[in-house]
Image 1 (cartoon, rainbow, N blue to C red):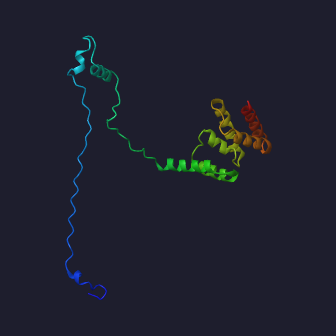
Image 2: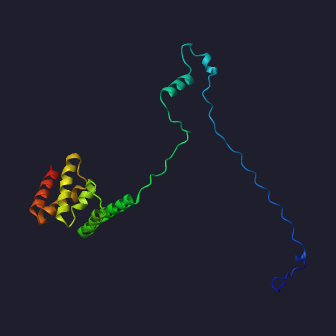
Image 3: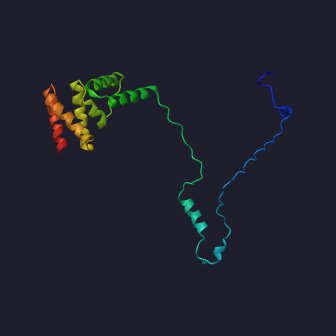
Length: 191
C-alpha cells in the first residue's frame, strides 16, 4: 500500500459492516383484457322482455352477419412500401429540383435536365407554371397550351404569380405567337 492509501484511523483496520443484500425485483403480473363473446344463453334481463322481442345480442349477431364490421382489436396487416425503381427516384428528384428552382436560369437548367433524362413534364399547374420561366420559347408555348387546357378543368393556383408571368411574356417574348397566347390566357384568367 502506498502512503496515501494507508489508513490512518486504527478503527478502519476492522472489516466494514456488511450492507444488506438488495431484494430481487418481482416481475409484475401480466394483465390481459378480454371481452366475453356474445353468448346464446339468456341474460337475466331477458325475462322482463316480451316474447316477440329479440335479445340485443342476437340482433347484433344478425347485423354482424349481414354487414362486416371492423373489429377494433383485429390485427391489421400493413403492406410493405412499394419498391420504387431507380428511374422513378431520378424522376422525382429532377421534378423536385425543377419545382424548387428560382429564376429563369435555374428553371431552364432543371427543365433541360428533366427532358434529357427522358421524362415528359406532368400536366399539373405548378410544373407548367414553372415552365413559363424557361429560356426556350418553344417550352414556354407548350406550357401555355397545357395551362390553357388545365384552366378549362380547374381553377388557377397562385393567381398573382400566374398573372405576373403571363404579363412578362406578353410584354417581353420574342415571338408574336408566344405574346398572343400569353395575352389570351391572361384574358381568361381575368374572367
